[in-house]
Length: 109
Image (cartoon, rainbow, N blue to C red; front, side):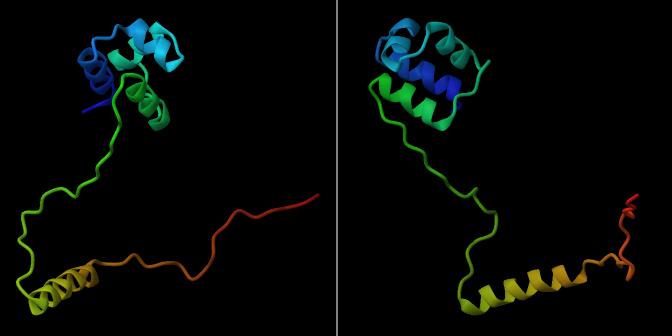
C-alpha cells in the first residue's frame, strides 16, 4: 500500500477527520490532505508519526520477490547453478581499456 492510501485508511478506520489527525500529529489539515492525495510524500518518520497519531503502529516488512526457479535439491545442484552463473559471467565480452590514461590537462599560468 502506498503512503497516501495508508494514511487515509488509518484515519478512516479510527473515524477521524483530516483536521483531527492533523491536530493529533501536530501538523495542519492541508498537509494531511496533500499526503492523502499523493501530492506530497512523507518521510518514514513522518509516516510513522501520522499512523501513530491515528492510533495504530507502522510495521514494515521486506520480502524477496517470488522466484520461478525451485530451490536446489542438494549441494551439488546448488554448485551446478553457481557454475552456470559464473560461466555466463565469464562469457560476457569485456571492453578493452586504453593503456594511456586520458584526462584533461591542467595548465597553470
